[in-house]
Length: 203
Image (cartoon, rainbow, N blue to C red):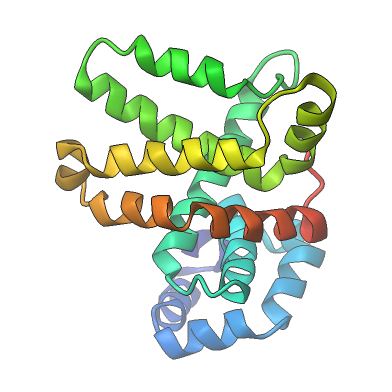
């Protein structure tokens, strides 16, 4: 990220010092200036996709009282991964799966380790789906009788809770993060709804 923003080694060193100073970072994120720069000129500045998502997520999360920057970091990573996966798929976008399909995928896991990694993947997907594509899920619920957002929320929170209790979560130092995502799934989803409405056009 640093080298995407800086021109030369001296600028990279100065920028690293700036971005690792907590007070400076908070001032940047509290003010509208950096967000406006990102929204209006990110291509010109070469700002990475992750940084773009991080600044947006951090802003809407703080507005909902979700102050932990590591939580915003995780969610921005999930958004970046989803965006990349969609670009790599041939034939364009695919339909969002139903909860029952995700549950069946979990039931077919052949080992606790496979179930853990699949749980994390599904949890990340549900966070993105309910946060960014919530209007589609609501419409599908009305037209087809599919589960509503509350059902997806409960499933996603449960998935992250299960992942947080797995030994691998402890090994990867993600135990607290997954439990935090479980506890804050609804608030995180609603913050992403606002982000989707105000800042994103995602086909």
